[in-house]
Image 1: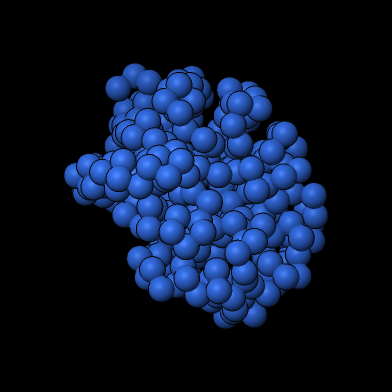
Image 2: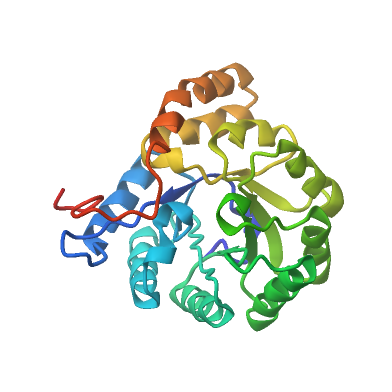
Amino acid sequence: MKFRSDPSTIRGSIAPVVTPFTAEGAVDTNGLRNLIRWQLANGSHGISLGGSTGEPSAQTIAERAAGMRAAVEEIGDAVPFVPGTGSAKLDETLELTGIAREVGADAVLIITPYYARPTQEALYQWYATVAREYPDLPVIVYNVPSRTAVDIAPETVARLFRDFDNIVGIKETTKDFEHFSRVLYAAGPELLVWSGIELLSLPLMSLGGVGFVSAVANLAPAAVARMYQAWVEGDFATARDLHFRLHPLVDLLFVETNPARPSGCWSSAA
């Protein structure tokens, strides 16, 4: 958890790894460890688990906790570990966030509560409660309106960023690129912003984004990580070339929806 004290070091391609399961339906911790080792070997700058790609809504608290523990043991301090700890229920969110803190996560990614469609004030209070409960743990807001049916407004993000030192950034998973700009305008350039939309990952960098949590890193981690590196090194032609070369994989990745757990899918036995 060496990155916890300085969340600004959590940058680049944060790979949102899938959660592998055995054919019997249990969390495949050996398979997860293999996936993480592969991500690290291919240059991913961080690991996330339990975001939308990790299908947390299809898992129990115990399953999610087992995944976090296995991930931390495998990652060590090699790169930042940023698990998703949000739920539709506040008590579950607090419990999972506490587990993440205990096992050594560097920051937590907390989704806006889904299905309830809360008001902006309710969203503020939701994140404020988590921030107050764990003041020493960096919190990243996770905005994904296509799944939650609610969009956290730029002004709400800015208010949270001003009021809580440990609310450090946001993962924006919206195809409304204007929203990215308005969030940074409202909160200021010190807010850490990651893109969760594959084809907006590179464009966000031009506005001051610090990286991306791109599901396509599950298929081509080296290319996604290199795209970030090329951009920060000023090799914009290479970054753009990689962006366009990843298009077919992005299209392939979203042919099917998730959560979905057909027998043996993403398991070490497959």
